Amino acid sequence: MSGILASMIDGLLIGSVYGLAAMGLSLIWGVMDVINLTHGAVIALGMFGMYILFAAFPVNAYLLLLPVIAAGLLLGLLIYWIAVHWVIGRSQLSSLLSTFAVNMMIIGIGTAIWSTSPYNVNFTLRGITVGAYTFDGNHLAAAGAAVIIGLALELFLYRTRPGKAIRAVADNREAAELMGISSTMVLALAFAIGIALAASSGALVSTLFPFTILSGAGYQMKSFVVTVLAGLGKPLGALVAGVLLGLLEGAVTPFIAVSWIPLIEFGLFVVVLVAFPKGIFARATA
Amino acid sequence: MILRRPVFWLILVFAALMAFVPLHANNVSMREDLILVAIAIILASNLNLMIGYTGYVNFGHIVFYGLGGYVGLYLATVRSWNLVLAALTAGLVVSLFALALGMGILRLRGAYFALATIGVLQAVQSFVANFDPWGRSTGMYVAFDAYERLGGARHALWTTYFLVIGVMALSMILSLGIKISKFGLGLFAIREDEDAALVLGVNTTVFKAIIYSVSAFLPAVAGALMFYKNGMIDPSIAFEFMLSLEGIVMLMLGGKGTVVGAALGGGLYEKLRSYLLTSPKFSNFQLVIAGGLLLLVVLFAPGGLIGWLYRLVPRARKVIE
Image 1 (cartoon, rainbow over the protein chains, first blue to last red):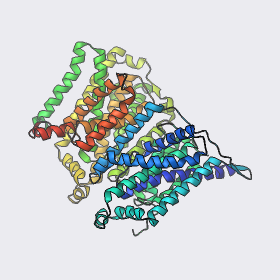
Image 2: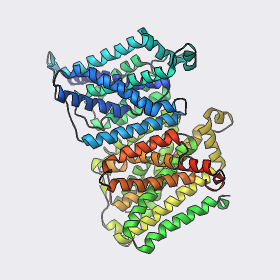
Image 3: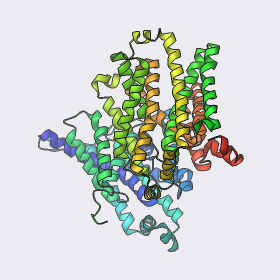
């Protein structure tokens, strides 16, 4: 019994990192109606970003999140100008394919540099022992960092002018433009923030598990599941739904092989989409 | 009438050339090159039924090819069935699977469906990798005596080649047939405006499920033939995500929604890929180049090569469909 409990607590901690990744996807999806298929590749870049930074500056790995986030913002602007700006307002097919093309290019370059062999960030925080069980220090720190970043985004969206502008454009782009908001700037900003969130979640994952350049794909799938669980454009909801998914994974892993998890996640994804097309947090009347 | 379409005869001539040129030259390496081209055309043409005709992106199209390979190989080796029968049964089984799956996930509109197809791929792969009768992650091998029934390995390879060419021709004819049928019109209506199509009496859920299932049949047959020819199958080669994506690149490159475009893109891209893979300079950058190509086509020439031809020579629309 304590084994399940421990596994669930672990799942809960990791789930907050899933939630952070999903927040990025959800923000971009909600604001500009673009399903960002570079998501998984950017998560992988976040992992390798952390790896490179930690190799160069062996300080506390969680401090290195800040440069990863900054680099993520720049990368986000770059991807926006290359692949997204031109297809805003065109059919969803175009943005799916254009972001997908960038995904292929990132994975291709990454494979050429790092091959597909596993890497890890060799940094360990001391755990906290409660009774018979020791909580892994890295898991606690990663979960803490994910929650802090998530709350910071929420504050940004609801308490600052640029944040308000992002929400305004998400609600009604034309009306926002009539109020003097430059929607191009806002879309670029929202995209950059979404990419930075994905990169930072990748950086957090890299302190927990070994990773390869292809590892992002699995987290991308989890992000989709979490995003549809939470409903679009609800970043904080995505964080909560991520924790739920982690909890669920933690609850089932003692009983079944890990390799079945994609099947379960996919089943969940389809069932939720068909049964609750607006997410489980949507009000019945909305 | 399909017989009055010039493209129909073009397809037959093309298939005949593909079949007889390597046979006449008795050139095995040419045959091996062309079989990959034929597979690319089969995948791109059938993917076109979803992306080009119906406007639904299927990122996991390769699932059909891989599952067909598994079912076909299982029947042809473990159960010792005749190859053609095994391949057709594989096609049928996979089509039925797609129909059942499609009734569920095709309730999802547009992008949600596209995401679900990524999930289908991962889920099927993880199922097969855990499925005992199919050898889990080590896969299955063709025992050598399975080739004896086709008159020895040498003979069997030529036979499978001709069968694959036949499937390729059928894929293109199927695309043409659907394009000029009333069913095809229904699909185009869904692509242009699904709500309007629904109001005008197109049963969109059924249409989408049927086309999803139809687009599964020939790739599954081709998968059964191809993996039989290769002599082995395992989950990572059967469900190679990369190939699924390259199918999309091929289709966009040639021109989605057209019969010739899908084939042209498939053939050209396959040639490009085999060049890239063998060139020492670019072999690591195959994905980068494919991605770049896709990006350029999506941003600047959404109609692909055929769309470009239509703009250049508007009358070409009448002949090249």
